[in-house]
Image (cartoon, rainbow, N blue to C red; front, side):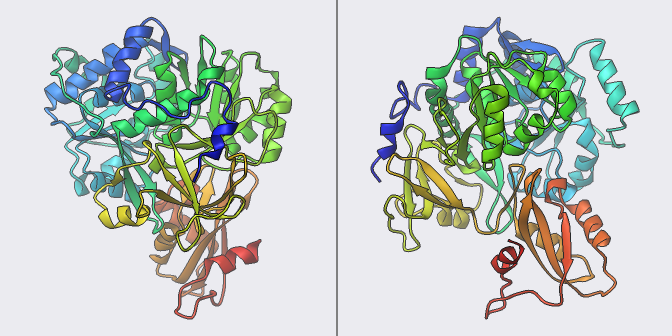
Length: 554
C-alpha cells in the first residue's frame, strides 16, 4: 500500500527513523545518564532518583546478577512488581549486561504465574512482598533458582520506608503470609552487587530484550520475542512523533504499570531518552490518592486507558488541578470514547489523543497527531518506518474505505513467539506482515479506524481477556457441562466478561461459579455476569457460536 498517510504528518515528523542510532537499550541508557545525570529520572511516593542514581543503582543490580549469581548472558529475569523505583533499577540493570527481562503481572493467580515462569524459563525473579505468597505456591513446579524480594517502601529512604511498610503490612494488611527459603532482599542484592566490577557484555540488536507475554487467539499466553532493535525502533518512532511538540523539561505521569508494553515503551524508555521525569503511580486505582499526587506536579504529559481518564474526570478534585503545562495526553490499550475525549478537553483544555498498538509491535503502530483539534474516531496515522496493509479474507489488499484485516510490517514488529514456531508462522503473511486480527479501514488521508476487533477477545480496562481461558477454568468445575464467555459493554471498564453455562449439577449457583473463577483468574478476567441456559447455540459441527451470544446481548 502506498504511504498515503505521510501527507497528513504534522510538520517536523520524518517518514523514517534511524533504528541503528543505538546499539542496544544499554547503549541508549548509557548516553542518557551521561547527558542528564543531575536531572530527576523517577519519582515515587515523593522519593526522587536522578539519572546518575539510576545508573549507580542499576549497575549494582547488574553486578549482583552477573558477579554474585553468575547468570550467563541471555538468562531470563522475571520482574513481578507494580510501579516502584525498584522496577527501573532492576530492568536497566538486567538489560545493560545482556539479560532478558520477563515482565510479570503481579496480580496473576498461581496458575497464570506458573505458566509464564515455566514457559519463559526464567531463572531469577524479583517480586514485591505483597505478591510473594503467590510465587511461593508455584516455586516447586518451576525452575526458578533465585528469588529477590522487596517491599513497597524499601527504596523510599529512612524514615519513610519504615512508615510505608508498616502501614502496608500492619494497618492495611496487604502482605499475605509467605515463606521462601533462601530468598534475598533487594537492598542486600544491591549492596553485594556494588562490590562487583561489571564485566563488559556485547549486546546487539538481535539479542532479546524482553519476553513480553500476551494472550493468543487460543487463550494461551505467548511470549512475544522483542529484540533490542524492536524496542529501540519503537521508541525512536515514538520520539519522532512527539519531538516537534516537546518542551525543555518534560514530566510525565506514569499510572499504567511498567510491566505493560504501552507504559514500558512510551513512558519508561521514550521519555528516558529525552531526559524527562517519570512520576510512578503505584496504585492508580486509588483515584482520590492519585488526584492528590497529581496536585503536587505541573505535569506535561500523561498516558492511560479510557477507563483511567474517565475515572479521573469523575473525581471532583481533578478539575482543580493545574493543567497549564500539560500538552501530551495519550490514550491506548483500548478505544478512547468520544464522550471521555470531549470531556477531557473541556476540563483540561487539551486534546486526548488516541493511539493503537500491540504487544507484538513493541507496541506503537499508529498515533493521532498531537495537535489534533477534535476527536476524530480514528486510531491515527502509521508511525514512521511502518508499512500497513488492509487485506480481505483472500489475502489481497482492499481499496481505501473498505474493511479488512489490519496487517503491519516494520522494525518494531516482534521476531517471533517464544518457542512457538507454528503460532509464529500463523501470525505472519507470506510477505512478512503481522496479522493483527483487527478489522480496520483507511481513508484517503491515511487515517485508520478499527471497525471490529479480534472476534472473540474481551478488552477490560485495556487488558486482553480471551474467552477460551475463562471457559477452560469454568469448565473445570464439576457442576458445569458447557460454557461460553463473551464481552458485554461496561461503563467503567469498557467491557466485562459474561458467561453462559449449561449446568451438569442443577444446584450450581452463580456465586459458586464466581468463587471458582476468583481462585484461578486475575480479577479483571472474572465474569461479572453468569447466565444459565438449557443449551448453547452451535454450528453444525458442534462449535459453540459466541457471536450469536454476543449478538443476542447487543
